Image (cartoon, rainbow, N blue to C red; front, side, top):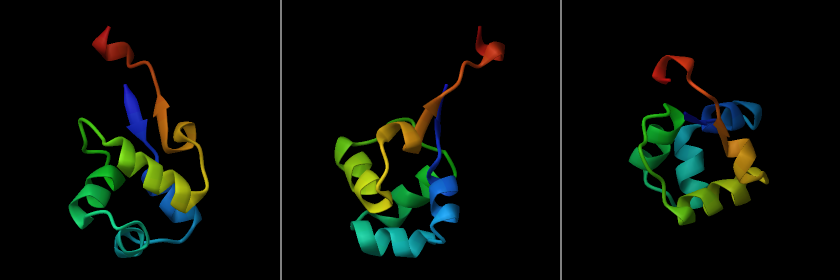
Length: 71
């Protein structure tokens, strides 16, 4: 299972959804869905903008965890 850590990055950097939208040009709906980890797919451009904003790597934005219940 892939988990989005945008909410953690936003908290560490004291950013709210609107600030992320303003600084990246991403739609509010896109940022909100990532914040609440409610996405099924994501565009490379979105990943690029978020990584540039937070000066992080893709692995900081997303993590893979094995979900034992799905096995």
